[in-house]
Image 1 (cartoon, rainbow, N blue to C red):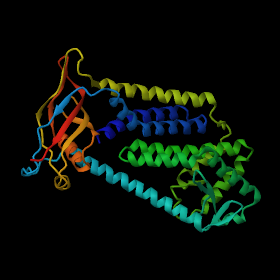
Image 2 (cartoon, rainbow, N blue to C red; image 1 turned 30 degrees about the vertical axis):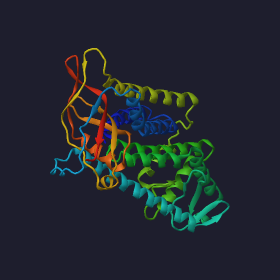
Image 3 (cartoon, helix red, strand yellow; image 1 turned 60 degrees about the horizontal axis):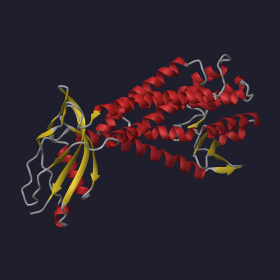
Image 4 (tube, helix red, strand yellow; image 1 turned 180 degrees about the horizontal axis):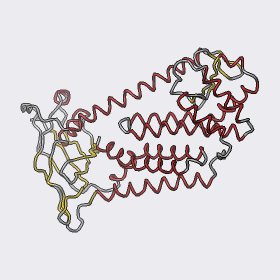
Length: 386
């Protein structure tokens, strides 16, 4: 949980930088703005992985071994619950709720497609009231049944729009964004980034359709016509042509002849990648610099001042399992173990109990130049039966 919260804090910097960049380019290409948001979201998705890798690049520097655990001893009385389990439970509940909603939406759109009438590779159904597309390996286009009354020109414009979404892989990027949002559901900037990614993708596709020769007035009129036929909610798990809340801004952008319609150049794409890396790298270096090594001049290693003994699970005791669980963690400036991971497993239940116990340990923190510092440690928790 500590890793997740630390990742969220650093992700705030990334998303804020993306937001400022998009504001600065508000009169520029929608495709460029979309790529900025996409790069930021991909960076947020990579943040926990990168932060977990950086400490592992340092060798274990402190070895702390617990006393033996006696299974026949009485269980301790209730302890004060550390904030970590409570926060994890709350995060997990929120993430599961967002993912469950996403899964239900995917099931809904899959069922709609399955029950639709297919003609010339396009699905028609009365269950949707706006054109949409979804899927990556086999993307499909779903049109409302009323599309049968459209003129050939109107239908061609819609098909250009939906094919542009498929060519840009917008469904893939928006789906990935929703998954990242499920992990960081507590972070308001992630919801903003997801909404902006969707909005900029529609503007970018509009620009592509217009740059291919569509008349702005006719195109805008058809969008308004489709919007008037909207009934119910549009499946959020699809890439829909029209969503009412963003329609006014889209029509205004379509009719604005001064707006650039060009796609992002290779120089712009390269710059976005380099700048994103330029934001991530210092954050990763900051992470690495926070963890010190034993042996550094003037560094005093941490020591245990209080600890909660782990206990056997009934299953492990019945199976007569004995041995050592090795944990790797960072002991922070307050003398609390964080970023705990199992590096040598003994038994799933005993591994969990070892981690739970160590979260309650308190250390005299490592000291350097008169200040408490973070240090990487290996903690061995022994389980022995008597």
